[in-house]
Amino acid sequence: MPVEFLGIAATNNGSETTPRTGGSFDKDYTIRLARAHEEHGWDRVLFAYGSGSPDPAPAAAHLASRLDKLQILLAHRPNVSYPTYAAKTFATLDHISDGRLTVHFITGGSDHEQQREGDYLTKDDRYSRTQEYIQVVKKIWTTREPFDHEGEHYRFADFVSDVFPVQQPRPRVSFGGSSPAAYHAGGAEADIFCLWGEPLAQTAEQIESVKAAAKAAGRTDVPKIQVAFRPIIAPTEELAWEKAHRTLDAITARTGGGASPLTRRHSLTNPQNAGSQRLLAVAERGERFDRALWTPTAKATGGAGNSNALVGTPETVAQALLDYYDLGVEILSARGYDLLNDAIDFGRYVIPIVREEVAERDRAAA
Image (cartoon, rainbow, N blue to C red; front, side):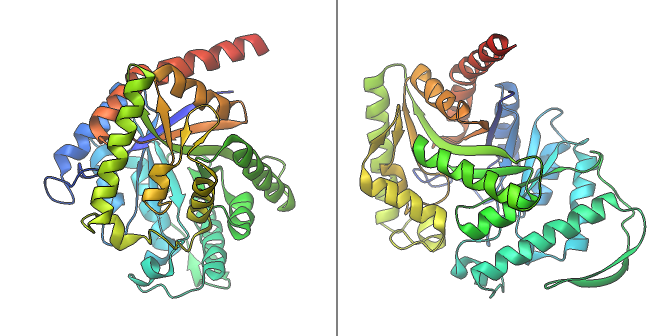
């Protein structure tokens, strides 16, 4: 079973531990970070979405026009554009990137964050809208004749696009979430279902929920599973744990003082989305799980996004990732706190171990 690695395509050098040194869109840094991923064994990078952040689509086009191999995962919120417009944008970007695009559809877990851009639907209605949106986009990508659409959230007549993706029949669709509504929508529509890093037992349960939702939707296949972590690595276990506690201190200093943008975007104590609630529940049960999972980084950020760490030497972190691979996880997402240097170190020291172990497993299974 192949394994893929997803990194981050940040548009500036800021993180939970460090304030950025320039503007929110530093185009030179964007390329520098992406090139570090491309040169150190990563498969693709995520362009994330935030209500006040730089638009990820032109940022992704900037990257795609300058790098030849690195694939792109573009985050998109359905509330920000009509699906006819979005489908053309995605198809155009797939041409710019020579077929390297995957689209990650974000339903939105926070009413407050969604309302910043005029989205006042309830969470369940947002999931319904996202599912319809994905269905429309898929049809636009693959239909050469004009068609009408009248659904719960969208209505249009006689539309046909004049730009189609390079990838045939279409680019992959990525989706994430940890609620029953998320499993329902993503299980039906996603090619890739994204989870945040939880203990192995809970991850296995979520994988089964995704599979059950796909089966209930009448699918004969199931989405590929992606799981995300924050690796903290060092040459020895002792140094790795020292680094982990320094990282936690830096996160706490920023969020505690209100200096981090995170404190504006996300509740540190009472998040609305199920994924963050799950991460905080795990953190309440303990700090360390399985081989290397460490929860205080998630607790310090209110379970914001990908926030549970894997701590240890490259060998320890690689073996921890392989534990998830053995559960059926095919895409491993990782992002450090020093974005550039951590991407290089992870690519140099962790990715080769995982790839070789996966190859050995494949040889043994052949």
